[in-house]
Image 1: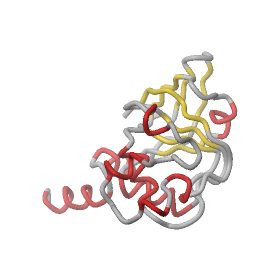
Image 2: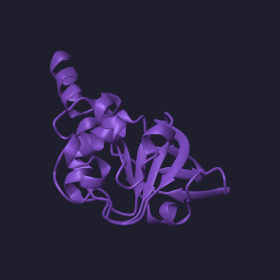
Image 3: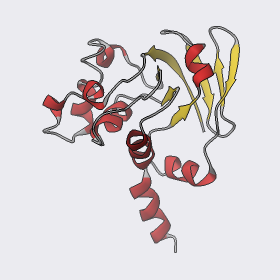
Length: 165
């Protein structure tokens, strides 16, 4: 599994209220959530993000509430993955549950700027900054997480597993 896209760069402590503001939590429609993703920190994000783009952020990404709307809004925005120095624990788990690839790699965060183009290999954990010609190594996904991602989330993974025996 690979991803390639342009960097949207954010700092430390990006909380779930910034990822998807509470005023939009009256819906769980992914397309509607995507329209408002990141708008309180980056008002032009929804208009500028393209399929495959990558969010790169500092420490404690996804802190705050445990709402699943936050990773869902990011995924529905066609972001291919999020790379952060660290993730809030509940955001990390919610992301895996809905099939949003996320990687922790502080070196990649420190070595990436907004607009850089990254290529990510989830099988090896290799992150290449194609703009700067640098390479970083994150922990690759364990096999069970690769299966969850390939199934587009935990619920689909369980359904597929139950149907196949």
